[in-house]
Length: 320
Ligand code: FDA
Image (cartoon, rainbow, N blue to C red; front, side, top):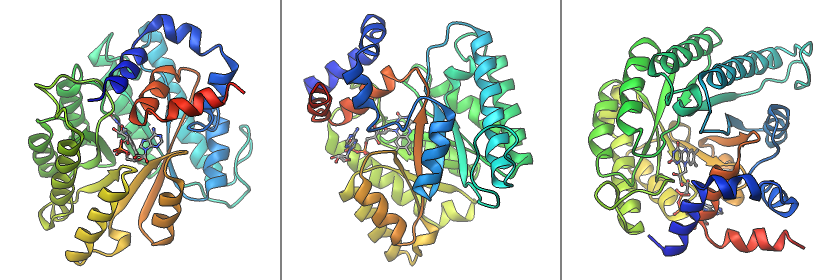
């Protein structure tokens, strides 16, 4: 792992920096490259403008108490209501798309945002309630994967969720050695599985330190997710990456298995790899853009910088 990436990831965990950096207008300007705005309305407007399916996630991972978690759960419930009210052209509750225009929007949540650090029981209750509500609306709930401090508990919570709600999926990270086994157990459940490389700072006894190993692990896992065995189990596999070489390998592998583009699903982050997004969408792949919004963007933004340290130049340019 490059030293610079390490520094940026360490900064993402620094409270002192977080409290100060977010006040600088040039930092706030730079963030808009990856985030259409801080409010749900901004994210909704971006979904509409993009004209493709999206996944919305509200930023904020270190809550101070259980009451904040309950607020987050309430917020996501309202988001689901708004998405579906919006789809029906119901404009009674704030800005919505034009009547009749359907919004294809799912949500993705972090368990720490639902209070995992305070009470696992309450966190699970919030998650099940969201999944139940999403199911009643014909929608999905995705669970993000956080750092390795949470991997096992996240898997345990997800497995219980999946046994009650098939309309749910979990993110897994190809940089972890354990993920090959985790993916097998998730395939057996017929889960929704979103494969990503992994965005946190992890030690070499848990995660591949070299990028080429992370990439190779990603492709091996992608092969497994595209396999007949995974399909037969009803897995909904999502490939969450902007890596053009990997995307092309996945496309080629899909073709070699006789899969049509609409049987393969990619998700990319808002503002990253736009030409790839347009290409995938035009080629007929199932495709969504993940849009983040919210006021607590600092840690998340530092992880985006760490993925591509050249982005720091972009921040500096925003100074002028
Ligand atoms: P890689 O980092 O190798 O980048 C490949 C290329 O993509 C780069 O060369 C560059 O061109 C472009 N690129 C990538 N990141 C960029 C950036 N920040 N700015 C500009 N260009 C960039 N992680 C996690 O740990 N838990 C999670 O729940 C999720 N969820 C998630 C959902 C979705 C839909 C996506 C796309 C990603 C995540 N991630 C995540 C983040 C993921 O782990 C990973 O950090 C990023 O996707 C970057 O890795 P790439 O696969 O894009 O490859």
